[in-house]
Length: 215
Ligand code: AMP
Image (cartoon, rainbow, N blue to C red):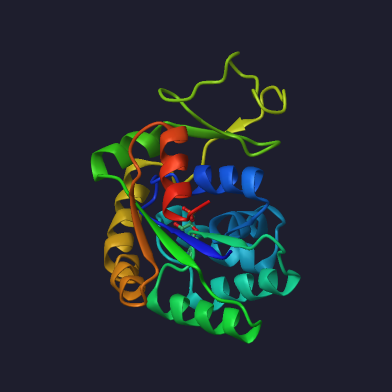
């Protein structure tokens, strides 16, 4: 099954994608993660996108479509979860073509709805373990022991994203409503859209996603 998790920054796409990976054996394709990996590897492309990402603007369609094409070539028996991609209509068209060229289809698009105030609160408090990627939050999900990752036991490796600040978030939200939200209508017209309430406990939201996907 190939699905898209669609929603504004902070909607919980990455968190829920991790759950689906663990429980359903799907593969998460996050263009944000792929771009951050390119940056930390010191590649020329990574250096080119750094300032754009820190500002909260969108990287060019050409770059992100190229990254996705590369990953699709590797295949995934359990299917793909697209997280943070597509973000523009051109990316959505390209994804349709890439999947079709491999004899694959998109099965569903889950729109995670969360109001803006909650997004700001979620994003400005979040951090992750630099070793295993487990996500945390200053208010909603603190590690059991301060400074130690519950999941892998790493110490002192928590990190915060450079673009998780209020100014960059404002730009990311504007870009979401301007460039990405038209995808809601696009996938609705294709009969693929499944809407869920993204507010609530992680487990509750995960259960809603499973319900709309018939999992
Ligand atoms: P994310 O981790 O999904 O919040 O993405 C972090 C940043 O990476 C975004 O603010 C953009 O600068 C860039 N980015 C990630 N995915 C895309 C995409 N599909 N199209 C354009 N830019 C992207």
